[in-house]
Length: 174
Image (cartoon, rainbow, N blue to C red):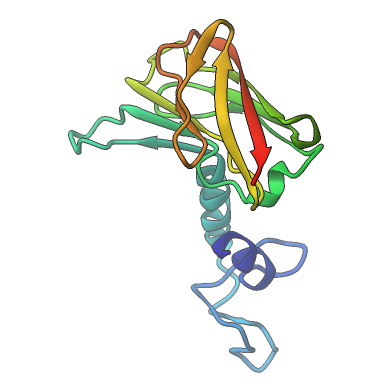
């Protein structure tokens, strides 16, 4: 909601420039729903939010070095409706560039992920999540001959997989 709200109300139309603060009604005599526009660096919030919908590199043990890479953890569920896809190419991370795509084939009972993990500095832990529309759930996942164990949110641990890999998620309607 924050992502779409900021895009709809927190940026000037057609320019994606924001202000220091954003409201839902006009905050100045010009009818702008923001305080102290333009602030050209405010668009970084939008880009940061978009990135974290797709790719997250985290320091979970607070030692100052990221060790966990999470892919697809916050994508809107509607992005994987039947026939839709999500494609991320060469996204910069603390571990190096990462690319992945998710192709939804809900009518066939599956979602296919193709993942190219960083080579320079592999993450200690890499997780991939498939966020399905309501009334759908992941029931199993397979990477080649290796069975993966999805959790109740559709997340699998792909830490042991090689750089370029494909994961097939079997899904079913509730």
